[in-house]
Length: 128
Image (cartoon, rainbow, N blue to C red):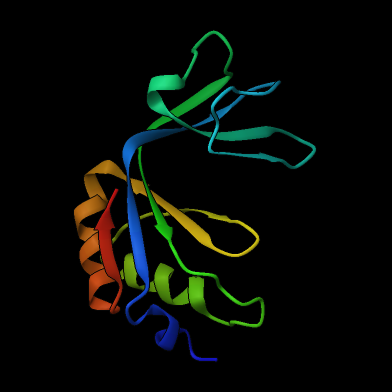
């Protein structure tokens, strides 16, 4: 399966909140995602919900982009195509994959450039 066939018309939903990527020793209430790799626990949380007393490190100012389509496990190169298009515009990414879809966080300052790159790939950008 060619990733361009999935990207053409693929809905990309722009979340209305600004997010922070934080580390904490425990759970962070209201987190969009949590990754525990055994060495540290990383949370993606709406900035408005960050409790500075409960986190170890904070990296704020991220826009969440969700590819609102079920992606088959056998799809090869989807994130490579997305990351390459964003890299060509000098946009750094923080990527999260769920069971059936992918999410990309980009710096707020790079959001419009990222959305233009995704539109150029054929994505249908939508604001939540």
